[in-house]
Length: 160
Image (cartoon, rainbow, N blue to C red):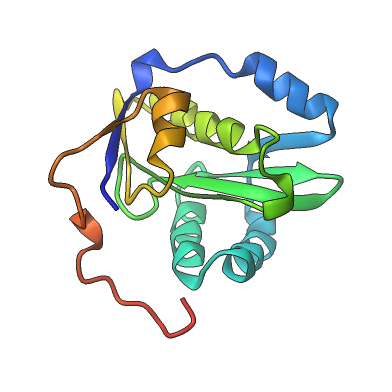
């Protein structure tokens, strides 16, 4: 999976989309330290141990560089930045039952806006899965020759 590049100075507005999500009872916000164990376990059981490791690194940043989506007190999505490398967005995941509601878009834009606020002009989306989603949502472009990129030779456990 190649990497993609995003212009942070040219992001779409997310205010209206976030308001619509909140009207349906879904809140997207920055995670806080006391939630780390809950978020880590959910990411590990819903996605993978590798993503949980990246999420763990995001909780070590100040401010925490993990955003979560919560519906009725239940975690339904997460996104991180500055986890594997500085200036990298990811990983991001939304529960199967919450997909198609705009949660992923909101999580993506919250992270990218936070990166912009920290002084980044561009963001790298590492090891992209759904390239079309990133292209459509934030105008991301593929970075030629970036596969496998920083993930070359990564170690996985048998449960990852």
